[in-house]
Length: 463
Image (cartoon, rainbow, N blue to C red; front, side, top):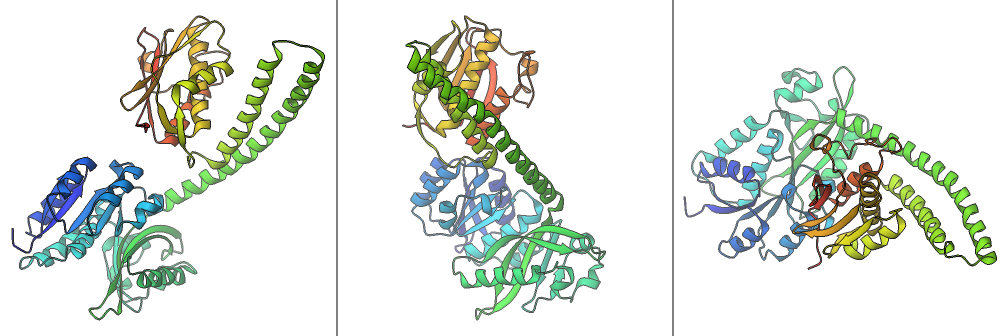
């Protein structure tokens, strides 16, 4: 390892990224790659080495933890985030603290791009011939669209995949202007994005979707990850980038948006049709309360109020999809006891074995607990005992009923799944949606006394 060799620190719990970078860069004496399997390990490592670049595999790390780590890292070196989710889904606060976002690092389309970014950030002097080897490895590793435009927008390099996808011969495309394959208005939009990158000292690359036109006239959508090139004098020198065809994915997303729009319209109609008779029931209950003094009035009033809240929240859920934006600390045991009062539990028993405060959307957590309680009572019988307790990284709810057969545990969260003739099949499906929306995980196993046990993990606790 030469004296000028830089240190590259890779935070990668899965180790695959670190191993590949070590094989690629280490064999050229270009950089010493040291890896950390967790953020805690990385914090300790940064206390002993002075990295030339820090690479974080974001898909294995919670956004909040990543943001905290970057804020407290105590290093001024460039930071590269690796993500399969796309730049638009990276936490904004985390994004502002980092230098570059590289998408789909496990995809050979972008592996060469990642190597190029690391080379720029390290700024070391490679051994003779290694620069040429690195760029050859970059080009050879790209198995999809790869190309370079000069400062005037002419294509000076394109791989075979670029030509194949667009329906041209490679020689036919080289030297042509980028507009030959751009849909109307896309060239101007791309130029605007390039100008924005040039004017931002903290950016040198971007990821955008571009509508392109094949030789036969078919419109396709590609996600382009490009870097803006400049001369030694700082003048604009074109762009180079890699891209992949995402036409089918974008069409599927459009279909999903249309389905969500119809769901929103349906939810609005249902909300209106339910709220009208509910309003009548609430009004009649007020009149009844004035005429009679009954212990049954208050429970009915609570139930009607709860129905009204559920209608509004379900309508909001349909409109906002699965995204959770507002969370707060919720005391699990207290909420479980409140949910017990709003579910028909007959002579069943609730036991809170242990409790803690969890970070959650309180409305959706309430609905999750109510659905699990209702499931336990409906399938466990009138005298079932339901227990709520805490796990090292989450919480559980179990009952002492008949349980769920192992063969059915993978499908209980499917929409429409029910073992009861009177069941709707929505209860556990909603549980699964809420868990996913919160970024948690759920599994079904055997309860302590042989019933069903639902374990919710990856939950943030209030320490």
